[in-house]
Structure formats: C-alpha cells, structure tokens
Amino acid sequence: MAIRKELTDFIRALSRQDWEEVDRILAKLDEEGWTGGAQTISAAFAIAVHRRFHPDDDVRKITRFVADVRNRYEEGRELPALEMEGMIRAALGETDLAENIDGETALSTQIALLAALLEDEALTGDSLEDYIRDVETTAARFM
Amino acid sequence: MSDASLAGVVAQLSDVRRRLATAAVDVTRARAEISQADSRYAEAAGDSRHPGIRQALAHVRWASANALTIARFLEQARHHFTCYLERIVPGAAQDDASVGLPDGELLLVQVRERSDLRSGMDAFIGRTFRNIENYQDSGRSTGEITGNTIRIVRAPRRPNGGKYIGTASPAVVPTPHHIDVPEAAGHLVVLGLLVGIAAQRLSHVTRREIARFRRRGHQKRTD
Image (cartoon, rainbow over all chains, first blue to last red; front, side, top):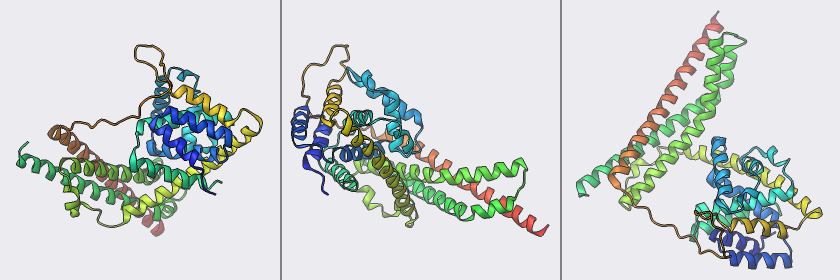
C-alpha cells in the first residue's frame, strides 16, 4: 500500500520548519484520518536517527543530543529525557528499550526528535527527496 | 594562494586518500581472516586456563568486532577528504582514479553492514508503530499528540530568555562555510595519517595474534 501524500508532505514541512504548512496538513489528517501515520513517522524517525548516529557511537553522544534538544525549545523540559534516549537507542538496535515506552510517549518523542534531527540536517532539494523516498519505501513495508 | 602551493595541497590530499583506502582494505582483509579462522583458534587454545591465552583470544575477538568499525571510519575519512578536495579543486578527485579502492572488498563490507543496520531498523519500526497504533485505540488521538509536540518544537528558546512569539518561521537556509585551505588541509592531513597509522597497527597486532595461535595450535597437535 502506498504512503499517503499528506504524510510525506508533513515530513517535508517539518524539515523546512514551515509551521503554517504543518498546521494545514495536521488539520487535513485529523479530518481524513491518520492511516499509515504511525508507520511513516516511525520510519522517518528511524532513518533520521541512522543518518545522525551509528550503533557503535558512544551513548554519551546520544545523551548530549537529547540534552541539546530539550534546551533548544522554550518548553523542551516537557520532553522526557530518558524515553528520548531510549527511543534513539532502540532505533539503533537496542529494540527492547522501546518495549517499555507507551504509545503516546513513543509518538511524541519521535516527532520531537525527528523535528530536531531534520532541523540540524537542513535537507533541501534532491537530498530531501531522497530521504522522503527512503521513508516511503520503508514505511510501505509495514502497511 | 599560488598554483604551486594549491597543487601541493591537492597532492597531499590525494596521498592521504590513497593511504586511507589501502589501510581500510588491510583492516577489512584482516577481519575476514579472523572471522574465518576464529573457531580454529579457539580449538587451538582448547581449555587452556592460561590467562595470557584467554586474553589473547579475547583480543583477537575484540579486533574482529572492531575492525569493521575502523574500516568504516577509514572509508568515511577518505570520503570527507574527497569532498574537501572537490571543493578546493572541482574535478580533482574524479581525475585521480588511482585513489579508488583496489577491489570490491570494502564495498561488500559496507553492503553487509547496511543490510544489518536495515534489519535492525525494521525490527524497531515493526515494534514501535504497533505500540503507537495500540495506544490510538484507547488513548488520545494521533492528531492531538502530534499537535501538542509540534507546539513545543516550533517555539525555540530565545537567547535572552524571552519567549518565542509567532507561529511561522522561515525555512533554514544553510550558509556556505569559508574554507581556509592551507590550515584546514594541514589538520586533515595530520588526522588522516593518524587514522591510517592506527588502522595499520591494528592490522599488524591482529596478524601477530593469529600467528601466535597458529603456533600454539601446532604445538598442541604435536605434543
């Protein structure tokens, strides 16, 4: 099953930090349903994590990144540090760490971390489209 | 910068790239040798409780486990040198075909590593998206959770502690970095040489440990 365009447009808008577009897409998804949303966001998050980190990286690199993300936003302290670290490490291979993170926290930490990872990468043009294609292909395997 | 000094920097960078490619392949070959023969070394060591033997066996296995990472770092370093060279003299890296890897070994290692990473990523996605879907059936909607998180990440902390006001921010436009060619190239050359030396040393130590185990195995069989 193909990934809906609204979902990949959401990732594009998040990458560009185009918040008006993000609002517009969220309203549309709320109206039409989020089918495939969990798969797309999880795939976008996992791929972005692998672009930034490697399973052999020192865990302190992840801790520093999470601390930076929580400091980056006015209300960043609302984001749970341990779960954010766990989610990154789970994406890098320690999948058991995701087991104890409930669905709501999993979704919100993935979106927050994804926003920060994409902000840092500042993908544009072909690089952004290559990333989106990778997300589509990966998410489609779970539909 | 004069043409002569620029040519010197290009030559240095090309040399470092060549050394990194060679070191990466050496490490990859050493790892392949260790992996194929690991069980033989364990057999040669037998049930020896000699601390030196146990430690040597642990060292060989550590070297095997880490050689892939070292080969990857060497290849990444070579890639960065190539990008840098291309920024200084566009086309210089493509013209220098001799810097290419001598054979497909490293490529095979990379393919295998990517495949391992991909299966790990799939396992994560499979597990986490079901957690999210199960939650959607009983808790707040995806839209609510997503909207609440977006509210946080769209409001960056202001340097003066003031609160961010507004809903839209312009797209990030990366600014080009100024490159101080001689200084940066100097740092890169030193870094490349250090990495190359470390990799060659790993390869050397690994081969020495392998030779020791072979000798031990031979002695044990002839005793």
